[in-house]
Length: 151
Image (tube, rainbow, N blue to C red; front, side):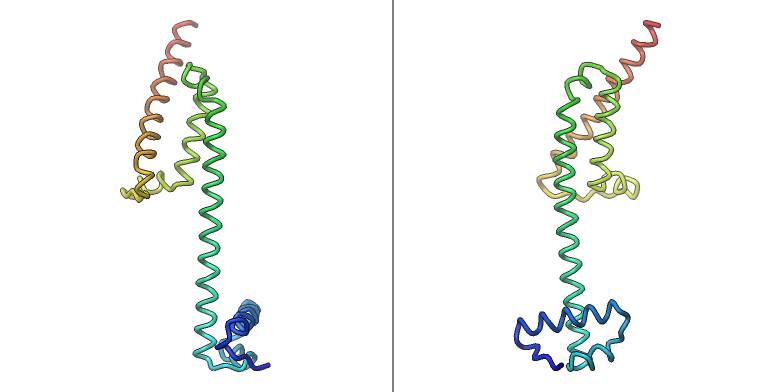
């Protein structure tokens, strides 16, 4: 069936059909024959479709990370007071939450290769998180020393 790809709705239909054929393993030549457009147009349609798919995937990933970071913040609130008071289990939980946040934000990997890429509004938050991590590690050390002295 021929497609008039100058009409947006028809182009979207042709793109959907081309994408299905490509996923099924068809060549550009086979797809262009099926949707009755040139190979150049077919290639352009598939490239645009792939780009749109990648953008949607990236948007979904960003939304998922944002949601998971908010969940980490909520969990942190639940154990923060106990951690600051020196509760070893709460400190471990806080550090685990912080470690998870670092992984989600790519901080750990960036540190390994010596780069940090953050959005302008994230720089203060990242510094505060690092400072908090150091403080909690000191609290954990002190609590362990006190527990050893008491024994």
